[in-house]
Image (tube, rainbow, N blue to C red; front, side, top):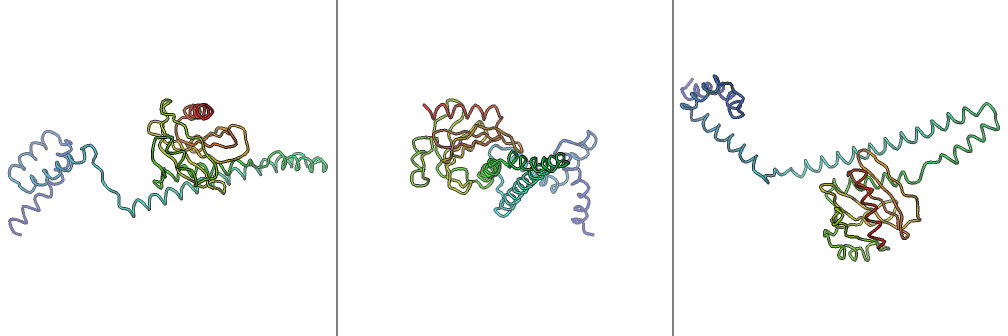
Amino acid sequence: MSEENADKEGCREWRVMLHGFVDDELDSVHTAQFESHLESCPDCIAELERLQTMRRLMRQDGVKWPVPSAVRSSVLDALAQEERSRIAARRTASQQTWWARGLRYVKEWSFIPSLGVLAASAFLFFNAPRSDLPIQDEVLASHLRSLLANHLTDVLTSDQHTVKPWFDGKIDFSPPVVDLAPQGFPLVGGRVDYIDGRVVAALIYRRHAHIINVFVWPDKAGAETASAHEGYNVVKWSSGGLVFWAVSDVAASDLATFRDDFMRQAGS
């Protein structure tokens, strides 16, 4: 073996110690040994300088490491598929629970034939699945899709007087666009989306680092509702012949405050 190769073979043991030295994980004895080795090994000195330079670069503010487009696409597809699976599983579980409760209810009354028929009829009438559930799933899916697919806005501006006329010709109604920056909910922009078989307006607001999607379309007035699903809060209200669905991962109290502020500003 040549002297050069012998030196490289001998440095392999020191290379193991090198990373511990860079991370300040060696005890005093091994630190002294490695520092003594550095005095006579230009290869280890070069490697040490390379690692220290890399650490300095990684600690700088604003350093970003671009993700390959293929990897990013795979991650987004996987996240979207997982969310679709969760929604489908939740819907299936809800339907199974509904049917199990109904069948148990009918069995309890089936010892008298006439009462069994009456119980079954009452069950079908009073416990039919609420029409809001599928729409609520669509609203949540659209919110997540806007975040995952990097398509949050079609018009990016905090100027309500720019966002509102932008919808002209794109939808067949005029959604109210209000400025809630003084209340802590600045406007981000708007876009068009597709929910419940029709094109709808989506208004985007921000609460600190959290996004609030507000979906708007014409519909008959309904009761105000509030619910939580998989860490996301959803509120629904109606006003002026329009229905509003707001969804976000902000606290439920913040989303309720947003709804109240929006209704107050839109009505003023």
